[in-house]
Amino acid sequence: MSDKHNDSYECEKGYCKPCKPHVSIGKIVTKVPVVLAELNVQLNINETITFPEPVLEIKDIKKRVALTQCRLLLPTKKLFLKGFVRKNIQYASPSNEIEMSTDTTVASDLHSFTVDIPFDTIIEIKDFLSMPVMPKNNKREEFDFAVSQSLPSGFPEKDELLSSDLSQYHQESSQYYNELPYCELLASKIIEWDEAIDRQPLPGSSPFNEGYFTQVEEKMVLDICLKVLQDQQIRVASASNDDC
Image 1 (cartoon, rainbow, N blue to C red):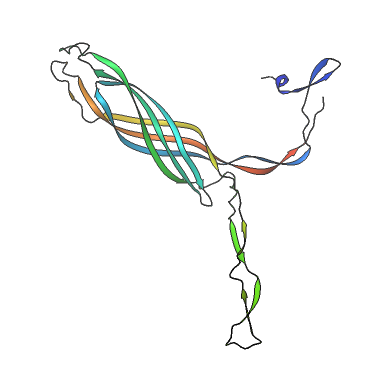
Image 2 (image 1 turned 45 degrees about the vertical axis):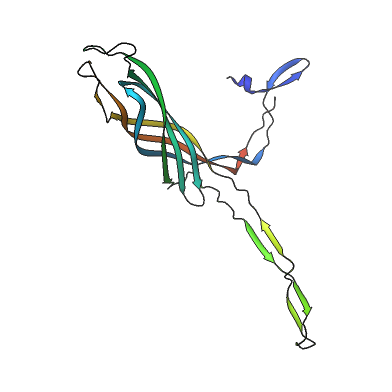
């Protein structure tokens, strides 16, 4: 988009010309997201997938990574990650309803099966790009007032009970609403190995090299790139204010 579309406009005598917006000059305090860390996290996943029907062969697998939790536990440096890999597996399933298998042919139809592969890990952020603002602790403090009361019979007449009033309760409490760090998912990469663990020949007449299976063992290396951010107040310098 050109600068013309970003400019505001000022109209004089029916003619509109672009102009720069007016901005504050000097050292300005603003509140913006600050990048605390950029991380590359690697996870190793081993999972067994069970299909709802016999599988002749896998045609295609589409994958998508989703994070359900990304929490920096302040004041520690521990980052808790939780999520799943959504896999949509397209496969061919043998179907004798279409045509009976022969020594040279196998009839099949295409199906798909979607499964979520969960992952869960905890990592430590060793070096921050910018230090997080640590949370302030809530406080509760009690206070009392001194009272004097007469003593019952059996005590000297001039003496008094000096203490606090048990019928009253006084407290001062403070609460702080701290900024919670959050994450942005930037990129992911998956390297996987899928292998059938219960493959057996097709029943009846079929080509000698054909078979079916219902379980696949999956070995997956998942690389995740993410940012950890926190809204913070920072000071910025504004040096110019261009007029029209």
